[in-house]
Length: 317
Image 1: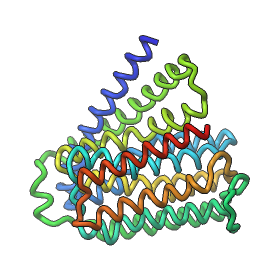
Image 2 (image 1 turned 90 degrees about the horizontal axis):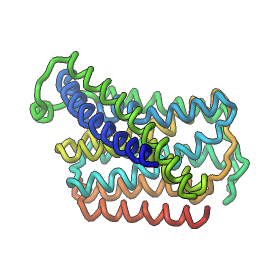
Image 3 (image 1 turned 135 degrees about the vertical axis):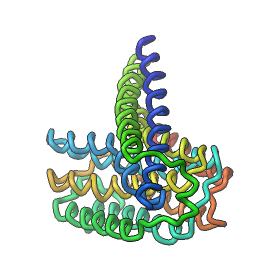
Image 4 (image 1 turned 60 degrees about the horizontal axis):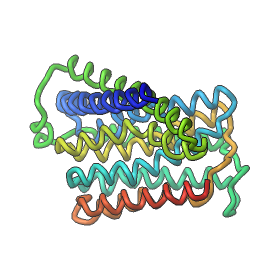
């Protein structure tokens, strides 16, 4: 157990170091490419930090157990919107641009609605166990992601005031920072999940509780570290872009691809869990619309809401 504790500490340290390099590299890259940080957050950073979820979902689909993908995405999205935005806002109030409030965050709301529609399988029922996300649903989700990317890249240009805040550095160095940062996030979170799961098992914690907490938290650790570090450095646009982009990527891209490979039957996910994905991002949208800032106390509300939800999940396990 002592070795596993050491690995947990190393894993967290690697994740934090990776988040720092990723933030620096992505910010500098945004300046060089003359695009806004929110766009870099919505695309490169979001896709990179969602690599653990993508890996878990694709492997489960290829092994013939794609059901894991739905729970992984639902849990990660709730954690992204409530815990990650909450912690980032408590570290430093997040200033949200009008464009993000009126154009970007609504995409995450739409993605959550599409997830609910795909899961209810055309039947208005409180019980969704046994419902299937089929290949047609997968096509619908992927089309949604293509439209999201088209819209995001079409409005990618940054204003001079934003890019002037970022320290100039060579493009090749920025790319190295991004790649090394993403690699550190993926490997560090994998070490953390493995060691933490072994510790929990040795302490007699059940597998369902481990899955709901450690595994879900581990796959969202890259987003958490990146957003908190970005917020601490005053990169609110990248922090919120990472969360919004990750939520959209998780639903539209990951579930879309997984459903095309192998249709997913829903097990262990309730309508309450699905509604939480929608409520969580709607709360972020609501807080962001008030003075275009997610204040520390609002971050506290989001974090408390997540902890309450987790406590309810554990009590039901």
